[in-house]
Structure formats: structure tokens, C-alpha cells
Length: 434
Ligand SMILES: [Zn+2]
Image (cartoon, rainbow, N blue to C red):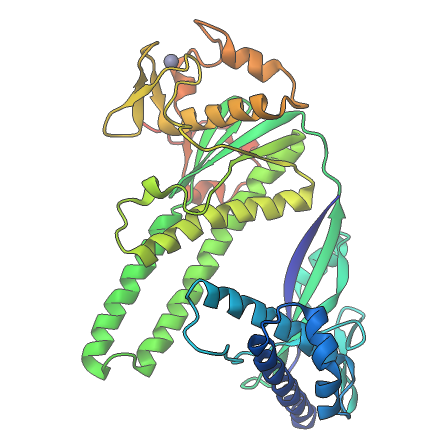
């Protein structure tokens, strides 16, 4: 059994001043508790909720006796997590301040503190009794409810002071059992595309993720130069534009990753196949982003293109009960999957097998090698069909024709509209030219 978890954002309607004032008071008290708890936790090196609660619960509870007691409880959870991540950052020398700043507060809630009442209202326990707020009906929320996800007892709420609204972060959970794989779908994650091997065809699904990262990076840089000249460095208007750009960047990447992950995982689920991924190390795939010199930028490209994409696939896989298999990524594009001999690459992504003399596209090689490793690795439940086909000596049937050595390139504008890869039966796809 695996557990899939999703967070959905639900906004309340605009609240009456009186009600909102009570919530602002609540937020202030909660923030104060968290601040005190964080200070204590950091001073004493506490990262565990249970210990923090054991040592400080009484203290913070007595600060605000009018407040429902569970806020002191969730404040301990909140503070423990903040202290934990701060101490970890400090350990690796990335903390800039002696204490973590409690700037953004979202109030942690448990089942005593909040309750969904039907689909359109939420009741919240406060120091002034229960407050009931209407929430905007939300497409995402309904989708999870309808698909049998379970509403988790924990939630968070944030105050939108400008709009006088509440923003709820609601968690859904679902237990799914993984099936035993009968087949494999291998995924080779690249900077700007994802190569996917399904039913003997390698699709090269374009993501353009590193282009997105780099594009926004240079746009920010241009904005900065322009505004610094006019307003001086770090000006307010520049910061505002930066924030807008970052939000757009994040949303776009997120959308690309989720859509593609969903497409791949659904195909795997339909075939009862496992998804095969490269096992990413701490700083893997570095050779692929060597051309990016700025270390911070490299980090961002890596996070978006490799880690982010993998995580999206893992998340989706959990939801559908699709098993994920990890294999060693070393030299996956270097060796011919048929002859085991080295492939000599020219200047583009094409190479020639040093034994058989056949031409290969790098991503096709990687996909087949990932598959071979998955088959060899677990000895698994997958049928021997694939193994037999791939390892036939001399003239391997499915890999014989050169067409099989070319991936089918699919631009993002195309796959983004697909529900499944079956849509590829029409051959209007662009072929990656040899
Ligand atoms: Zn070969």
C-alpha cells in the first residue's frame, strides 16, 4: 500500500469586518506562540514535535487561555518543523540569520480546530467561539471528493488581509495498492525533453524546462539592469515585477511537469507496467548542464528539469498504484543495447555502434539500456518477451530497422492536448531528422 497526498487551495468569500478581526487576533496569538517555540527549539536543538510539546506545551498554553487548546498543540508542530529545517540549513551553512524568521504564518489546524460542513462551508474554532465561513466552490476540491480521496484531518489556513478572505490548504489522501508489473515503461529525463519507451517506440516528449528556467533568468536580469539604473538596486517596483515573473515561471513549470507525468503514468497503468527511472544521485546529470556556468542557475535547471520531473512522476505513480523502479544511470547512453559495444557519437545526438555499425539516437540508447537494467536488475515479474527481443544476437528483430533507432519527436504543444499516447497513431508527428 502506498499513500498519495495532494493539497488543494480553497478560498473563503469576503468576510465581514468583525469576523475577520477575530481571525486577525487569532493569527497574532498563533504567531506569537510559534515565535517563542521556535526560539526555544533552536536554542535547545529540538527538531522533534514530541519533545518540544513535552517541554513547552504548558507554557504556551497558559499564554492564551482563551484560545482553544489545540492551537498550542499545532503551534508546537509548526515550530518543530520550522526549527528542523532551520537547523538543517544552518548545518550546511545556508542559514543567513541566527534564528529563523517567522514571517509567513499559516495556522496549522487539526480535526478539533476545523471542520468541513458540506462542500461550501468550513467551521473554525476560535477564541470567540466557532466561526463559520462560506468557501468558493472549487473545481479541484470537487474532483478529489468525487474520485474517492479522503479528507485529511490536518489543514492550514492563511489570512488574506487585503481581500479579507481566508485561504485554506486542505489535504486529501488516498491509499492505493501497487500492482505487480507485467511490463516496463522507461523514462530518460533530459534537460528539455523526456524520452519514453512504450511498446517498442521511443517518444521524445519535449518539455523545454531548461529553456523556461533560462528564459526567465535572463528576463529577470534585464529587468534588474533597467530598474537598477532608474531606481537604484533592490527597488520596490523591481521586486514586484520579480515576484510576478517567479510566480509565472513556477506555474508554467508545474503545469508542464504534471501534465507530462500524468500522460506517462496513465500509459504505464493501462499496461500494468512499472515506470523505470534513473536513480538520481546528489549532483547527477551534471555533464548535461555543463554549459550553464552560474552555479545557482545550474542548480535551478537541475531542480526543474531532473528532480522536479522525477518527483512529479513519482507522485502521479503513487496515485495510480504504478510501481517505480530505479536503475543505475551510469553510461546508459554510451553502450549499444544490442552489441554491448561502445557507441561513438558525433557532434549531434547521433552515434554509430563500434561493432555493428548501426546508427543510434542517444535517447533511444538510453531508454533501451534503462529497460535492460530493469530487466536484469530485479529478475522480475515482467515477461521475458522484452528480454528475448532485445538480446537476440546478430540481427535483433525490433531493433533492426533504423526507424526503431529514431525517437518520435513530439512538441509540447501537441502532447499537452493528449489524454493518451494512442493519439500518436496519426503520423503527423515530426520525426527527429537523422
Ligand atoms: Zn550495436
